[in-house]
Length: 409
Image (cartoon, rainbow, N blue to C red; front, side, top):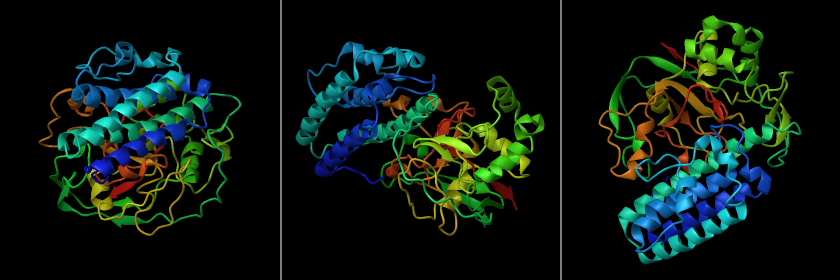
């Protein structure tokens, strides 16, 4: 993501990102926007309000004398910022029929008006620009979450309604699994300070890598079906202990959104035939790890993934479902599925969270989660970069998450 530090560029970027959120909710009804399908997901209306609250709290209230937000909104739409104040329980966000969607949209318009005035008055203020850039990246993250949350919500409806209609693409062609040797020895990973990055991507540091190779493509649906039909979800020896307990507790028998016939799946475009040679998606870390064990291989570490991907040009496009990539070399590094790694989400050596409330953005989540790399088909393009560290709990699978295999050499 390039820096958006000039007055004009920042104002343009602000307007574009905010407009994009409204474009994404255009196919939704007011009823779609208020419902919450599980505790980990949030209603579309909440995403719209929370990202607006972020700008109001961390920009307008901090920079505009006398600006006061609605105290009720300060509780309803605060996600996890303990230093800012109380929060409404996450698992009950779907109970918030008020404020209405219309009121939330008017709230966005009021904050946008204040932001536009502030940005026009404070041209050249680099500290302000940095906070606005963070807010824009934050909203883009919520745009991706909005789509994955809506997909889960619509999948719970027996009518299998589509978020948006899309032409069904020709099936992917079979692609041979090949191995790409990665850099070894002492290598550097992490953001180098050029352009925008989240604080968890830094500092850049050295790691030692022993000889390894990563697969040239993601694991496919056909390959995952072979794991399933070989009893993969019934063989305890393939699973980590917590993973096997999750399989038993949740009754997992196949990937999320796959139908019982193992030939169809739910997508943002409605029910579709599973593309045999397309990337397998919506897998938890536990499923990815179990598949790798079944295949006699492993998941790459995040350092291995970055060392291989760092030399690639980033090519990314928005789509409603992951597609296979026919490029040479490392395929589907970006724009298909986030890829689970074997690395726990921990701070890099020398990491220091930012001071103040914004220091809560990433650092306090560095426990009990696993790192994913790359980007997905619904990730905003600016977030597709080699150093980006996505992270989720190992049981999570409602995101567009897949896997790439690795092996020791």
